[in-house]
Image (tube, rainbow, N blue to C red):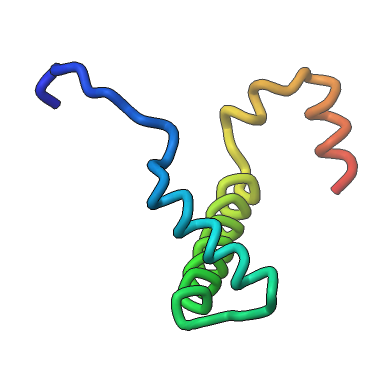
Length: 81
């Protein structure tokens, strides 16, 4: 990073806005072209990866997580198994 200030335009220009509107209209009319199929496929893959990452993150036992619980909760949790 150069440290120089960079302006970020959060709004799309009219051309990009029109393109997005055209794509949305096609989808709303049931027209699913190659571009839409690719986007859906990529989003489906990303969702599966994210679910797996989240599951593995929360699925494992964490020493820090165990220490953050009050003693009474840890005892109750141990007795539930």
